[in-house]
Image 1 (tube, helix red, strand yellow):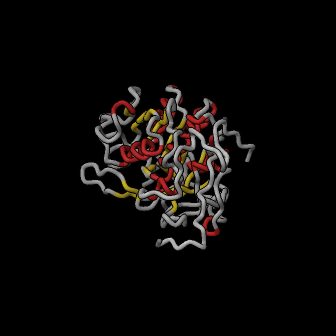
Image 2: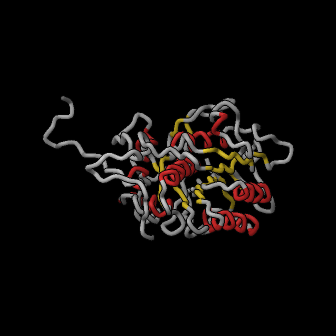
Image 3: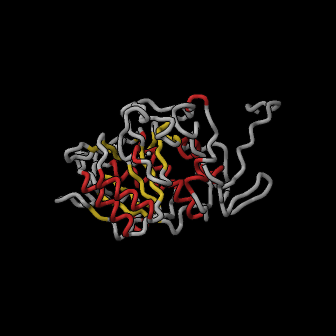
Length: 316
């Protein structure tokens, strides 16, 4: 994640009601939204999230990625909003250490037709100031962002940022917030913005390919809503940055893409649809509020994977 500096230090994070889904499918019928849903994929994060083969692609949805910028050439130019901007003095939007670019890349992977509004609120060292992040949040609201992805954190409850994020939610945006990577129980040791309790927001922890809590991720049975892939996530390297990343940052970015897909499908309440569709796991009980990892296909009303017939030899 990215730290935010002012009197408070910030850092990048490397976050029920009736469900209404307007377009879905029953187990015995086809759906243009469900598309070709398969139980597994070579790209394990999409397979785990069940975000592959779907026709809900984020079309018409704007996702603001408040992070460290956006290097050119990774996310297609036609997917990037012309309102993208830097709020870091003397640093251009393109001056990125790789974190922000990879977050935008992961959003685009899940929701390839969504518009990416890149808002640079962290410098090339990964540090940020509260006013930069708050200004970026205000810009996301002004631009009409449907989803705001926040992979940054601090230990202080900053009123300016709290107000900006609550205003964004009141304006109709769904905030997706990384839980952080200090291996803390946020119910006891709050970090922000995860602990702001913004209405309709989703705070996300990281899980590995087995659906177990990732090493280092924060958790909290009340503060953290759910979990998403956040271990060994493949990304495009930038200026020597790693080809795989981990933590609650990629978990939040993938979740933001999932929310964009839900919004594009016509879901009235994407947060509730996504959180209500999780399947509890013993390893996540008492760690996240839903007790399970996110499942985009289930949130869209798509059928669950059909388990193999136990009488069949899978080797034949």
